[in-house]
Image (cartoon, rainbow, N blue to C red; front, side, top):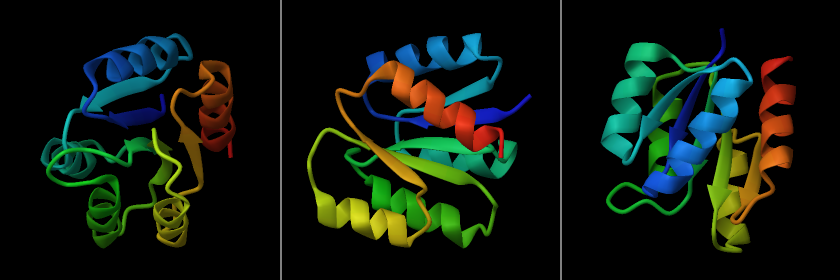
Length: 119
């Protein structure tokens, strides 16, 4: 069973993604902040991370930077409510494989997760 980590400070988004992705048969972990996310990454080695760009404290880029330091082969899809293309570009340069702008189409996101975890 593939493991997916959802990192978002918004509780509603974490719960929505957990419900949708659990129905797809994935094991879901949730983190409201960067420190929790990094703990889960080190303990569970998720196959895919859905990572919000704007998180109080440690933002998405900083979390991604720390994940990359762990040298795990984890796929990352960025999520943002903002059209900050420079930040998205920086995330892609650090190995993020895709990004979604909130509010995202849940079916598109589900398909992107399915596609990434089937390769």
